[in-house]
Image (cartoon, rainbow, N blue to C red; front, side, top):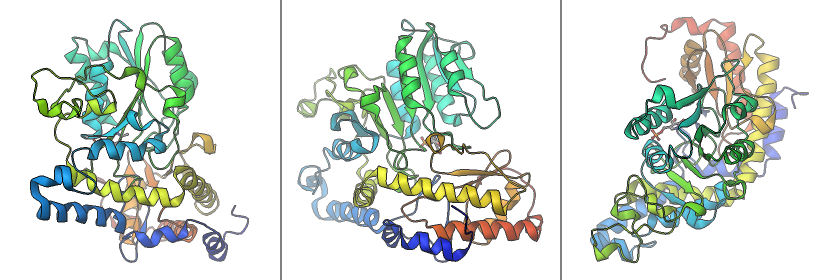
Length: 423
Ligand SMILES: Cc1ncc(COP(=O)(O)O)c(C=O)c1O
């Protein structure tokens, strides 16, 4: 890939890229190389238009928007679920948008944790913390001691989790496995299929947090038989800060009463009968709680146009892998003092690359000062996400050149050492 590590070669790859036009639909801040789409994707004209449409409808239709808007607001969550279903490999009824990712973990773990199936829940020690906070809370709620009931698979190298170690942790005392599809720090992609199969063999359920893969990596949740999944839309799907989250529930679980039951998850046909007893929708829609937050859902409606016009997630994944391959090769060649913490095997890699350096924190600040927007994760990781919808090969080339110049000039020394806060 870097047989020819020149800017001209990068430009040639951009010229041959069938998705290169998509970037014109994004507001990437002027003069910046935006490599932080695994944290917050930028606004697109499509997301902006969808949001503006809802604002217009609110002004012009007010309450009638629930039924007369285009599309009607009443079924906004279900309709977005239908559009999202191909992205995660599910049937339209198995997906809905609702709540935040964290709330959806509470909702789904709270619903599906059943000590009779097995007392323990398998997680890993590199998870995003909110997942553990929510699971621990649900275990406490079920009367269990989380320190006993959480079976935490430990990383051998501090970067990745061996599938073998996950499989070894699953035995008859396990009732649920809840893992990320992609680790937020190293970017390791888990073997969802093997883990789901092992969970089912042990009589356990398999749930996943797809925050770092939805929109970047295709999934086959229904086919693989994953029981439930959650995710957010503000990373690779570019639906905006704190935008409504998504969830999937396999159809074999339809009809179960959700732990966070609310009227918006009631069967739509009878919701306005206002009965005092809840009648769950026979779909993932049952896991909605309160009124769909249309304003936080609208940008996703536009953002999904971009994915569809790209030819779906498979096309985005193809380019994403080419970009991360290229980035890894450039880091190897141009930044020998750094290590790549992300698996090199494409089948085990999500959408970002963890570039490790002892001064990662200050290097990330120096990069941002130069307009290369990355982020830092403890203890030594600069995360670089060349999101395929709006990042090109020349951008990757230039970002690595900035990194090289910062190290050559010890430019990071101009920044204070880390003292906390958002990075
Ligand atoms: C794996 C994972 N889960 C959950 C979250 C955050 O959850 P929420 O959207 O509820 O803030 C993140 C945020 O980056 C994440 O990376």
